[in-house]
Length: 461
Image 1 (cartoon, helix red, strand yellow):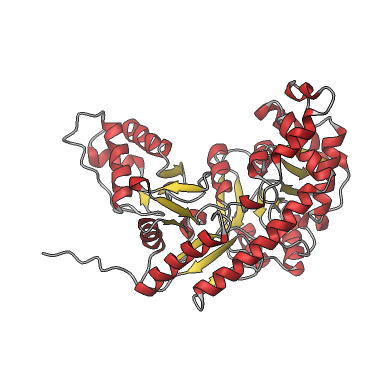
Image 2: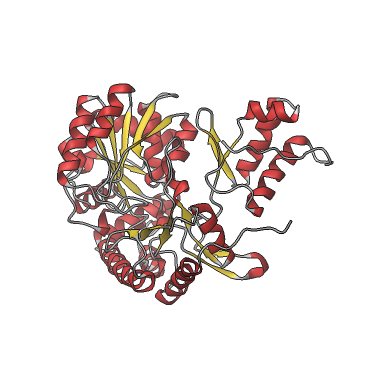
């Protein structure tokens, strides 16, 4: 827990706003680093001699400004200001362009031709129907395309098993909102996709990290956790995990399925990166069809702006998930669904995924050339690498130094389950750069930082 106490005595702002501004200022100055825990609200209220409600409002305002995240029971953590940002090119002070290697972007230079899709739509009869209300789960073409994409992602399903959601994060939300209660426990890898934290915070769920190695989650570690605490669900990314790029072996998948069956866990199997390693092991949902929710979609394989994902759900859950989609969104955009369906039907989605996999492989080659012998974890066709830092570096400091040199990377704390120790590592997204040239430039900056070593932080007395 960070011992942090702002000076709010000499300000004309409301105290809650002064607290929020102090957090932002100290994050900007590097006094508070990504992954640092702020004091509990009650403790800070006592130290400042203000009400706990005032501190709560201050933390909420700082969270709104994007510098912290947290919830009851997990503490309040300083966020990485560059990680998981939706824009592909950030701006540094003074307007200098920043190479964004911090966001998990699917190489937009290989996106499909949207103008051609609109031209094709414009020739259809009754195209204005796509602007009308309609049930997302009743169009047989859309469901059929979803089944095709799930099958191409490795799981054999019929269209009636498919539930369409507005992206994989929305899929997580509707599944957990439907089958978990506030306070329920979700097991996940020690390092995992930050989307899970956002959903868990919204639904007031707890997340417990499970020990992993270079292959991924250990079934025996999950079993030990289940013996001590009752869990509701297991969230995992078996294929090209974010951020480690690990791929679970077939034996690991069967082992996790066995533990999930033994301890009555629902399995949320996030396979949005499956197109990067299509020959990976069998889906856990194939081994465990009665409890597995297989999630795949088009955001990482085709284009994130579509916001279309497909859940192959067990029979008991399908209608309830459809109701949850309606309750949360009313409907998935018919226009984007139609474009997604067209691209799946005519092969454009698969062609795009193949091109992006090939480009990712080329970018991995550049990373090996530039980073040389520096240790990192990845996969030959992954979008990301997880760079292990020399002992002299803390991940948050390294990310700040890279940002100072106009390159954005994401410290491992952004992906670490609360209560677990983050490694001193940073995730580098190879897909965020707009070209191979820009990627090489950004990686050369990172290599230079590694070569230069940690700057001296000494101050004169």
